[in-house]
Amino acid sequence: MTQPPQAPDEFNSRSLRKREAHAREALASILAELNPVQRGQLPLPEHLAHAVTELDRVREHGARKRQLKYVGRLLRELDEAAFEAIQARLDAIRQDRNRAAAAFHALERWRERLLQEGQPALDAWCARYPATDRALLMQRLAEVKAAQGATTPDPAPARQLFRDLRSWMDAGTV
Image (cartoon, rainbow, N blue to C red; front, top):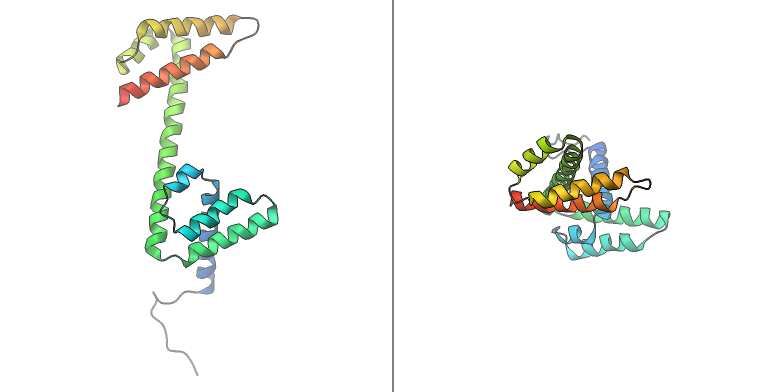
């Protein structure tokens, strides 16, 4: 006796179910990599949040793998709306991380440009970020150049320059 044909949206092949299961397990490993603050931003049910927190405690490879599978199973049991809410929040966290990395790299480029080009870069920086203390910036640049010229270079002035540039950049973008 043959089964009546199912509608295309009701049919879930075994391969499709396995792909979805693997996708949820991959999401479990992404959740495991998040820090506790980022995890706290996710709309996780309490039992799922507890299982993900357990991942931090489990160190052994086999036990960690089992716990990841368990978290993946809990994710598979979630309804679609809850899963999509978690995905949306993860995407937002990922975008924030990408924005922060881009800002960091831009700041590194500015620091190098200021050290290489001198006055033209200084004028461009001050025009772009008017909250900058120009005299302090010139002093920091001189300190970095002096530290780089020493027989044993000191990274502290370059770090201080970076912190000051970041604070001026943040003040200019707010």
